[in-house]
Length: 237
Ligand SMILES: *Cc1c(COP(=O)(O)O)cnc(C)c1O
Image (cartoon, rainbow, N blue to C red; front, side):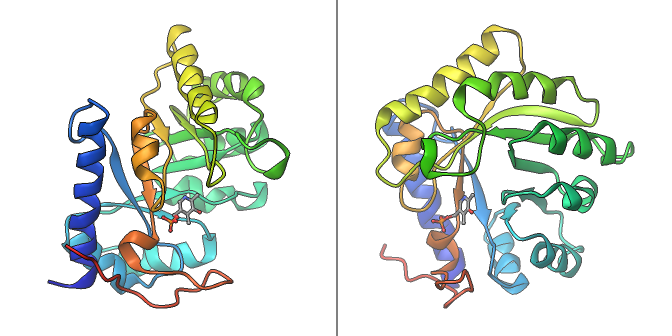
């Protein structure tokens, strides 16, 4: 068995164990494989190991991989910061965008989504770390942006996404959960909390995550500037 295939299985076990511990069904959280910085060959192996959803953060790099892997039925998620002059290829070629944090970006994505495709799935990114992060809307503005996304014809609001600090207090997660509940209470059709990475997927699932974004635990470590340092992880069984 290849290293990535073994890592996919180990990660699935972690997710299932956390779902069980949380008293949720064993498949309560989807696994989004974060393949940024790793080559198309690594994605092919992960797909052979049973994964279909892949997350990318850097647009130019991502588009090269989308082309190289066009023969596979993959679901692409854009999870990086998105500038307004780069929305078109994301609207045309991705299935999900996790980091929508501005009205202007949402409107452009909706206008540029081809009518031949289903609406683009969108999570509104929430800044749960206050001033230490530049990304995401402040929690008190999240519902406004969510309402706007829900109203745009080219988009489908799915829920919220956050990147908490490593040692985030549980109150930060509770805030996300309560926003999801508030959104539901006012009739918004949300089903997704995109939360948790390689190091914290268990606590994220305990706090209600429905989609974990896992990179290094599947593909190996990334270097300082984000280059893949090695690929393939050693998994202890
Ligand atoms: C890189 C990245 C991840 C994956 O992080 P790992 O620690 O490698 O699992 C998840 N979410 C976002 C937004 C990322 O940029």
